[in-house]
Image 1 (cartoon, one colour):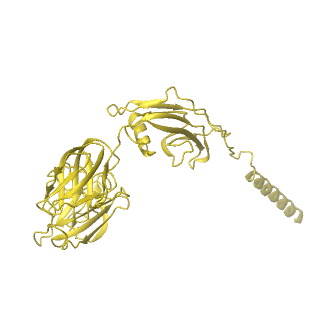
Image 2 (spheres, helix red, strand yellow):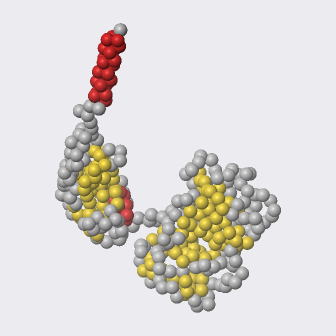
Image 3 (cartoon, one colour):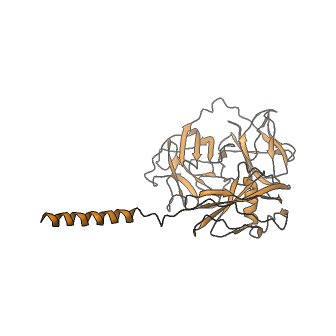
Length: 376
């Protein structure tokens, strides 16, 4: 009986050893090795002038050899572009999986040129390369040789613009009545704000309310608070929502508890807003405002009848050059950043970088300005 127990124990140990050996067998281990750099083919042309009309037409085709990571696995290719051959601050303009060619449209190549910092309406040198990698984590990246060519991009206006609508604002709930534009921070394209007068005509829960729209005459996209209308009590800060960006239904309303001057801030990255009272009691009350500079003949701006510190021009044709704001007292205000910024007295010149018809808004409380191209 003891011998049978010994035999049984021996057999069990042998089976366990066999199972352990099979579990540690590494003959099927997936191993990859770094590839040699792929070779990006030379281009058939070295100058590409981009057509702002036929933006969907093909502009550039790039092709390269296949990477070899030692396994039959799908390989990722990232097409990168930069404004120098060292690829400082390179941007990825296309990604390809399992293929070794890509065609960029006119609009895609123009956007790439703008992303790497090339000036519009001028011949610029641009560099391209392909970075191969493997797996979902883009492992073992290897860069190819680079090719370069000259490109003549058209202007690409990359900013979004937003407008006020609601009972607490100048146009009321009319979404197409010269609705005031929000001002954009020049160093942060996600940060918008508006300093001005908001009206609450009565104690009614629905008075003193407003929302943000992206296109005059259209109710979507529209931005507001996360609460539904009826439950949207006035708050000094909170989360914002949008139809259709964050939800299918319309959001609730921002608002004020009393008529007066406020600073409203709106961040499209954090999806947060703030609303705080603003002391405008010491502000000057100008009776006239005009634009001047090399970009245009002198033109008078229109003063808001709702808020005497807000000025605008619905449309004015500007050419490349500079711009300033001049008050009826003779003081000249200007900033240093194109499209939006904050002007100060004797602050220099606002650069106008591209010819177009513009809508211009200026706030004499803090010098904020925004210049919105109408055709770009």
